[in-house]
Amino acid sequence: MSRFLSNATNRIDAKGRASVPAAFRAVLVQRGIQELYCLQDFVYPAVNIGGPDLLERYERKMAAEDPFALEANEMSLLLHGGGVFARLDAEGRLAITDFIRDFTGISSEVCFVGRSDHFQVWQPQAFHEAQARAREVVRQRGLRT
Figure 1 (tube, rainbow, N blue to C red):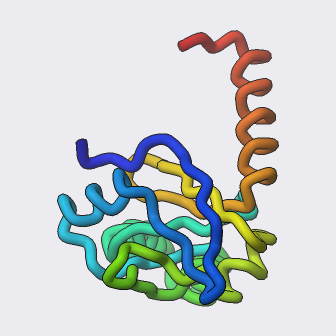
Figure 2: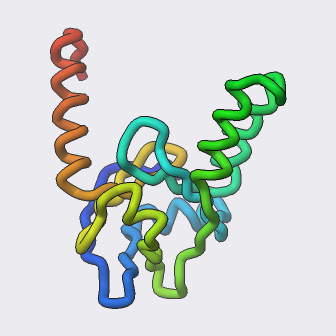
């Protein structure tokens, strides 16, 4: 399957790295993704991680705007000012950098969360709380699986 699904929490080692779940690494290999684009999420205290196509998707949306309009300027501020490139090491670990830690509050553990065409990294408790809130909103709307 070529989608990022499920979630897993892993410890961060003494060098500030965490193993990306094997299922997520398999999707990266299947999609031929070697360089990762990491973007601070616009809503949640999470960092979105995907291939160059993730950046390109946002840039296409931004290109549809007037480049001098406030919306395009704000999008660039978030997209380019809130994004970095990264790579996994040979053992499939991601460096949990200050860029990630400062935005998410991650300290000793990181929760990897599948989001279909990309994945996110979260502070574990923040993810579980956000997921519970989302479940409650869906329940209140009367949506069922």
